[in-house]
Figure: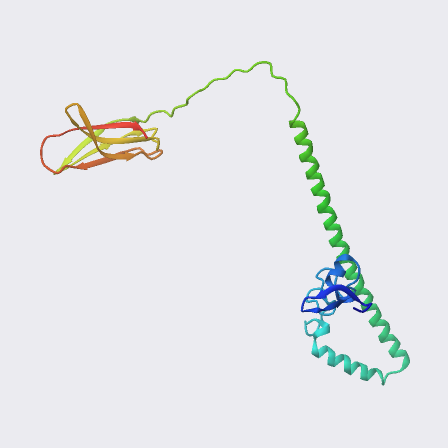
Length: 233
């Protein structure tokens, strides 16, 4: 392991160690990673977000082949320029590099400030919760206690006129008006035989409905005594 290598192994080749200047872990620990961008830990020259893009082609400048050809041509042209013109071009390039470094520093500062604000808000929230828990834990002196158990029953539905309709073997009880209908109550169509009453059809009320119809079909003709009753479900 050479001096310019760190102690982190290359994820693509575990037998080799990473270069300190291009090591992501060293960048996070502040021990290296100078060739990586501050936000995405990718090579500064090829980062799709941070790396400068050529205005003419819209691609990452370091990876744009057209820009490389133009730069090569520019270098060839520089050899034919005078010393004064060469210095001007070099100064312009230095200014561009300085502006790029300032832009990256501003992005880094903005990210650091955002993380700081988030940490402060979390601390405030934690302190508020702690204060609330302390105040709720204070002892309360109870002088006397009065208790009761109350059962609150829903009001029973009120049924108005009931119309009985017989057609062939089918008998229908039609409630024309009903108030306070609720699913807590059920209507049964029953047949009375002596002292016994048998439920033939059942219908659960719907909340707010105003009329109800319930029917039953007998198997044979004859005289039958029917009842319509309301009960709690």
